[in-house]
Image 1 (cartoon, rainbow, N blue to C red):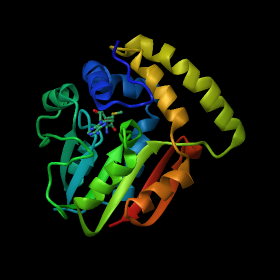
Image 2 (cartoon, rainbow, N blue to C red):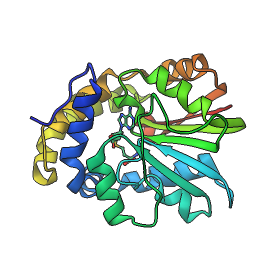
Image 3 (cartoon, rainbow, N blue to C red):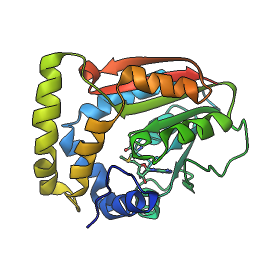
Image 4 (spheres, rainbow, N blue to C red):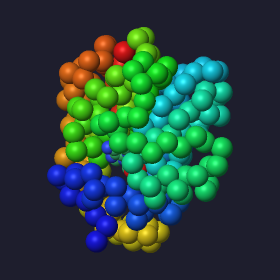
Length: 229
Ligand SMILES: C[S@@+](CC[C@H](N)C(=O)[O-])C[C@H]1O[C@@H](n2cnc3c(N)ncnc32)[C@H](O)[C@@H]1O
């Protein structure tokens, strides 16, 4: 059984991602019907990486979320605690400097990065507030945070179709491509239980970040939360 529960025990989360690693990129693309590429473009625009910037992409998995920053001339450092995801990342994206590390105890000095990003990762942390604090610690003063995460659709009808329809169908869709379809039961559960946009912004502020704000993508299915160190 590869699936984590909503208590998000790090060992279970790590093992679950180890199991889905080999087919993670493919399943991701198929399940989001490619929309995720436009979410990635919005993410890059929000981070606005400059040539020479050092960008930490936390919970980077196979590096699919880190690659666009490198493509814009930044040095992107993908960090993750799943050895399976890191191994797959090194295989398919050998040019990226993958680092093994837990987001609640990062292996970096204070004030190291110009920007810190996390895509679809924070929801899996046993203690997301501790993760946001740790991201703050390793970001230089004036540096930026961008969190890309599934969120709460703002329109009532879209919310019902998405949360009651799509989320229930997700494990069946995943069974076509995923190496461990059960993990996608956890994905649906964790999305439904995740804080909405204002709640996450409040958590970002509580972690010590300045001026948290967010932008909804695809009606709030995904939200980008931005803040400054
Ligand atoms: C859904 S994947 C996202 C991968 C990638 N960022 C993307 O956008 O496709 C979530 C990743 O978060 C990682 N993760 C979860 N909790 C973590 C933690 N405490 N520290 C480091 N990585 C973590 C998992 O190992 C997994 O690779």
